[in-house]
Image 1: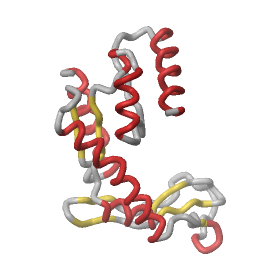
Image 2: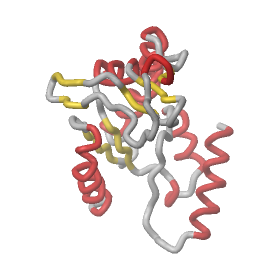
Image 3: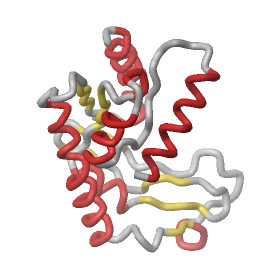
Image 4: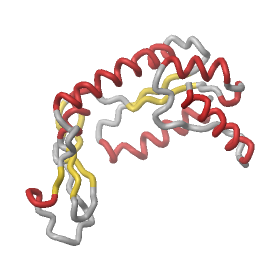
Length: 173
């Protein structure tokens, strides 16, 4: 509830100072169905959530990429050494691109302590526990809202398609 109230105040302030009359996109919010209900009960209609965008990837894809996350202590780059090439997904492994030093994996690459199979499984469980009811809420169209689900099969290569699809969706709302 505290997050919702702080968000409402922030959105009101931004709306007051905005030059455009269009809506807004929030990344990672709402995180629970309760937050949606709090927004519907407390936000003016123009600040309520009218739809959600979900970038959908199967847990298997997320888990593979997360377990390959690395950080180079030398060049300060984040990347994933794990590639995905199954079920129409093609997300190649990556390495630091702009490192001007010899970036030796054993010496400089760090694996986050929380990037273990158990922790990733728990993160995914919590994600589904909170996100699945939100998706169902918008699929059932209980609020007059809309759901746009996109699956980026090719990671960064899909960005132009994702941008144009989201823009078209927003233009028709």
